Image (cartoon, rainbow over the protein chains, first blue to last red):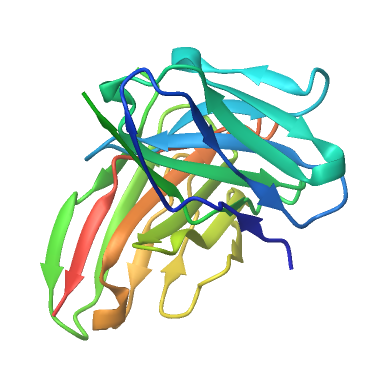
Length: 112
Length: 112
């Protein structure tokens, strides 16, 4: 069965620190990859996605993610986090079956 | 405004009392789905629908029913709720071409 692993369950950073959240998946075929963000008390919204093309994807609010096919990874990065980035981050993988698999989420807390 | 709406947003009920959580989208999306979100488990798909009258089980369908009589609506039905169905529920919809999901605001359900 396809699985999505997010290695960091809780991350605590100070403002201006750099961020990298790991995401690995187990399926070897063609996949669509997503990162969603859930701000406190809000619903999930799309941060960025990769379908094909340039493996370095830029999303909203300065986030980016790199698809490394050989490592089955899609890590999320941001060079300098802000307090407003405090949220839960979910990696999701869809291999065209319209049954996306979500990771367990990473809770990010950014101290001002 | 493009959106997914859910009602109710909060619900406290008792074991065995049938309930329905409604979901509606105004984007003419073919695909709709229901998820439950539990601490440490991330999002797990309950049911999904590819179009009107086409529904299928996700990862955790036990204890739930759905229907898709109209394209815009996808209600979630709990015929006999149990305490283990206490959770945060999200409805989502997407255009099959873009594969990007739009989430509703969530319904927090407590079953006593």
